Figure: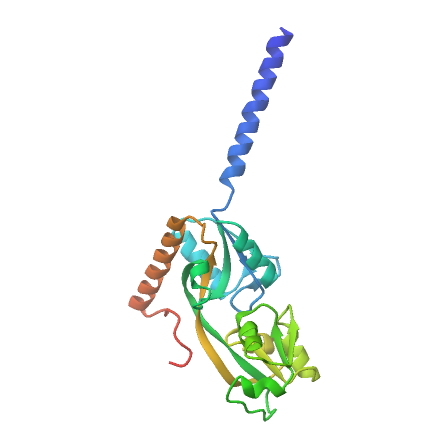
Length: 249
């Protein structure tokens, strides 16, 4: 009698453990998306959720492709390291450069971005090349492609930060005279902080795309890209929304 009851209870435990495992597995996202604070494209809202123009676009196409996502905000270098380590991890979003192209599976373009040198409005700073910026202390985010390229060009006066939100403060306080920032993000971040800036030299424009670990299931990538293409096609047909365009067009 006692043995039968023990077997019964053991059977129940195994049953509920199996159900728990199935439920846990069902909740696992198909893609884990790491992103950074890059307003207005992706950032954390007041409830701790990742939001922003590009983040919402990604959610929209993932829903249409029937792909579950888990968006996580991390500092740029930490997030990118997590993506490089594990299949199924992606970064929202990276500039799709020739050097990066073979290192990831891509979905995009989600937006057209780029980078420029910004100064305080009315500063009268005038530059026409990266080299012209060398004589000015310049705020830049460590690890960003723009920063790496300017470092490789030999800039001797870069002031590196981990958070782009520090750059308008440094400009305003006179700690820097230039800000190496994103074409889309820098004006937005500056406005949020009440700092008036002007673009004194655009260096480059580039596609901004989702970058996934190369071991990620290619079928998921293809479904996302197909959903994005269909989204843009419908937008083109209805003329309500438009795909990303080059800023100089």
